[in-house]
Length: 188
Image 1 (cartoon, rainbow, N blue to C red):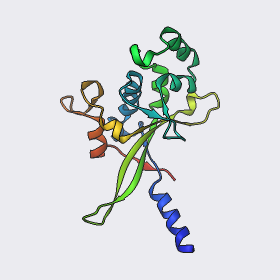
Image 2 (image 1 turned 30 degrees about the horizontal axis):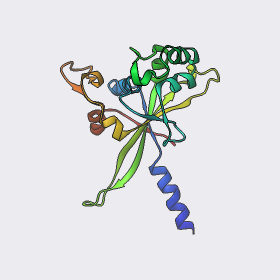
Image 3 (image 1 turned 180 degrees about the horizontal axis):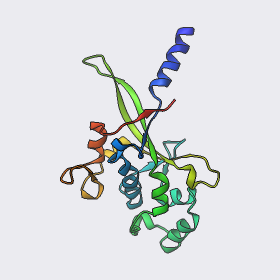
């Protein structure tokens, strides 16, 4: 019985999210990810899910409404009730983008390699964090969750991440996550 409890705690520790802070020097490229994901959500190119119920999809208008922009969400719905099917807004709200640009979480799972029998971390999603400065209650809140399968479908110049040290090199979000060109801290 004690062994099972230990295994449960051990597995929980392995599946804890890793936080990527935009303020760290080595995370300059990774700090562009939240803005690109919000842009893709606004255009309808990616699906997002509620943070506590990751099987329920959420759209851009619901994100605006939930995170302190109800007037803008209502204006979008009044202009075009089915805006996500026919009209696409031109740019992400700068206030919303700023509130999600501080940090985000990598949702990871430990997977065992079948050949080498070694454990490795595999990213299964990204959860944006709404900054406490932007919240009336002054607390951090979980934002939308993006699955890695959907993130891997984003490609092209619109979703390219520029390398600040070499302007000739651009990465896709998929490549940046696969190469782990960022520093992340495990959340406990």
